[in-house]
Amino acid sequence: MLYKNFSHEVEIFGQKLPEPRVLLDFLGFETHIKQIRSKRGADVWPGWYDHAAYYIVDLPADKVYGPGDEVPLPDCVLAPDYEFEIGCLATREALITTEAEGLKYFQEHCYLTILNDWSARDIQMKDIQGLGPANSKFVMGKSIGPRFVQAGSLQMDDNGVLFAEMTLKVNGQVRSQSNYQSLYHTHPVTQAKAAWSFPRIFAWLGRQNIAIHPGYLFGSGTVGNGCIAEFSAQIDPSTGAELAPAKYGWLKDGDEITMEVEGLGSLSNKVRAVVNNDSKTQQKTAVL
Image (cartoon, rainbow, N blue to C red; front, side, top):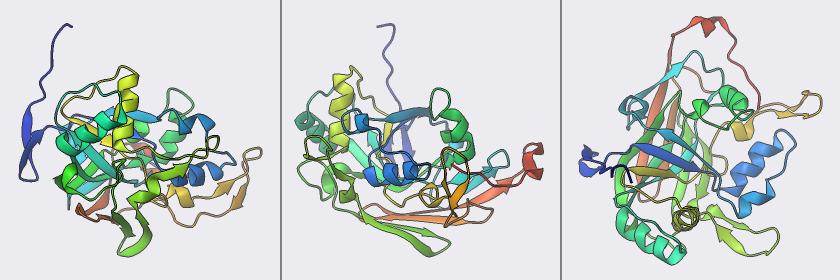
């Protein structure tokens, strides 16, 4: 080992915690995947039920926003979207290989918050032609808050899946009401009930020889109906023709997104358009 990195603590929401320095964002909710992929005539990848899907991005301070912050809406982004998730901050190094170990670690050494995984859907369509989501998940940054709550203090089942109501509002209008228990799905082959809970994710990573480090922020994935893309236009994959119109448009200047999670509070941000290149003359439209 060349060196050992000790993540330093910072004061965040009035607490001293390891600095959130990297986001490992998973794809945990089956409903979200089904609805996204159905827009282009695709099914859930069968491997998803056994192989965790995620991306990793850095979390520099200028890309992390808190409650009430205005989030810049770059003019290079034509299809800006929000994504409603729960974030899990790790505070201790560990290599976990069983879900029992994962549950204990989750309850004792993790803090939860609301996470808005801002996404540029037009850029994402280019990303996935290469090495997968990266720039599209980085250009707008992330919002977290309003506080970090120790996981073990919240109501959850034996798999570490919270009993928590989740409500999403856009400009004061409710767009989604769900519960974190919707993380559960049925395995298409075994018919077993399963969930990509944080303890299961930790154990899966450990079996891939991937350790957890202080300052890692894990994303649950977007809850069903938790983003605009799930309501985008339905497109014929062979012709590109629009089969059904979008229910909602992409984000625009001044839109306010509010995410509420039982036990974690409420996170609100407005998006604010900024001009940083010549793309301001382009029409702000895109399709998945």
